[in-house]
Length: 347
Image (cartoon, rainbow, N blue to C red):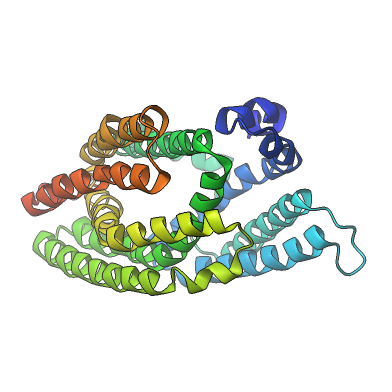
């Protein structure tokens, strides 16, 4: 939030050299930055609810947030119902209001229903040195993994932005379509962590291993169907995007690549989020995730994109080699069963 709110121009210049992109971003980023702490709080409450099998509440609050965001964006961007047309600033304002609404609703439900998750200053006494030590041992690798993954994702964005503005547009559309396809896969992976973690917490290791196997097969099967879906909609879906013909060609090419690689990405998603984290095997996933991303993906994208000047689809294809390497390593770890441990025993 701090760099986005107080140093937006500097932050945007890191991400893109395009003066017009920076100019538009300056209207959006400082206002949008206000929502970042709100998202952090909401995620904590959602995670507590999901971990205690109250998954329906986060689903409804997310639906309300998404629906209100779409409606508010429409009103503020285009100036409907008497409001002035605010453009990209309106998009940011609509998102911030939707995030506030989501947080208020989820906290209210937890308070009214007396679910787990609310805390007060008196709860600080429960943070004993032994608890903090054990907590950090598990969470620092996960936090580091997410940080370096986000940093790597941002680095990809910087590399692609220096390859051209058309590529930014094509990648944005590609990621939108991929995110839609991945929604169900991510949900299954998160649900898997709850189911597998519950069995590991009861020291039912063989049941946890069988559950992990079934859920991995299920997720990969759905991923194959999603890949087929993207393959067939990669051209019809372009009617929803107002982009140039050059960008449309790029989108079709990268969506074709995405369609074939979704099952590979799903193997990694399921192993890291759904299986290894459930067993507290966070240090291993940290080294694999960070090692393949920064040891292969980022360098190959930099070399092929900025030095060799290959076309964007080729650069994107080469960078996905990272996912293939990661999938092989993660599957070997999954088969070793070393992740099947009780991480909450005697906590």
